[in-house]
Image (cartoon, rainbow, N blue to C red; front, side):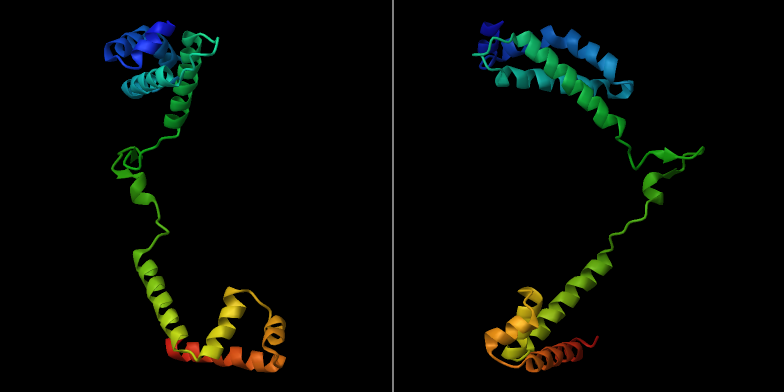
Length: 182
């Protein structure tokens, strides 16, 4: 089988032969794990994809037989596929006895385009208002809110009184409020 794997890496016909030889294993795994027959074709494609991946990922230097490697990969791959589709619910699927509505109809969206737009506009206005501040006030706000410095540390760094930093911060915030009209 090692020779077939080596040939299959470059020969499409050999890959097809290997795929056909593992079809019964894929079908058996689908029968065991995939309960919804609607997904049979998708599960077959998943199985083929797993076998093709094994052809290229198989380490020829290992003593482990290729057939065993493929068997484990297919079993775990199909089991994972079955797990993923078990929780796959379409929002367009009908609900209720008359099935007129869908899950999409009853879901509330917490995302609002209008709120997102308003938030972006508020941020633009705030940036513009900060640019209009005098440089000292702008630096105080930057150190407090962006560098997370305490006012005591700012006082030490500037060699000024604590209350002057407090007043500068208050004036800066008042100027922002006035400019933004909050």
